[in-house]
Length: 275
Image (cartoon, rainbow, N blue to C red; front, side):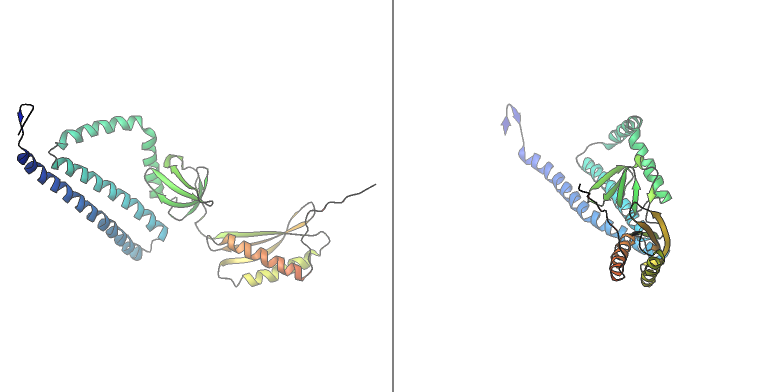
């Protein structure tokens, strides 16, 4: 067939294109099969390693997410290279150009390099791990993912914060070891302090049988004097992450027993004097 004076053999074109299209489809199918299998193998290998070495679940989740991300990046790179090879494009000059471009980008993107370096040391030193409750970079919440460039922190209101690793400074990790459950309770100045402390000690003895507490709780006595109350303090060591739950339960129990013992928990009063 002649078009604008040029002879075009559609049969030859189709014969040349079909094998290439077939190879591309085959590569995409292999990619769709290999990636999920690779992720499963990584997960199984880490599970076996954690059983042998008794590694914490948080550490395993951290390594799993990181290795899965790296595996995905490598597979995407391999797929692109194989697609270019299938299309007959020389990848040597492209790789050489990418190396030069990468060097130029590295000088201009110092923040990115800082993110990667900081992320590497965060993982190496195990400063934070997945499921840890941390305070850092102005955020407070649970770590969901640690990458070489960014870290995801879920705030308690549900907000997911993407934090560049270079801003992770002065990490406060609240998930290492037992945590303190602290309850301050105010009583009236007219109340017998010794009696109130004995009641608190009785309540503490009940919670000392609670498996959530690793030490205590104990009534340590008068903490401070308020405008209308004397503040008594109860302190105990709980399993990590359960301190708030234990504090709520203790406050509820203290209020119930104080009501039974007629111990007043004062609240602000206003006195009106009318002339």
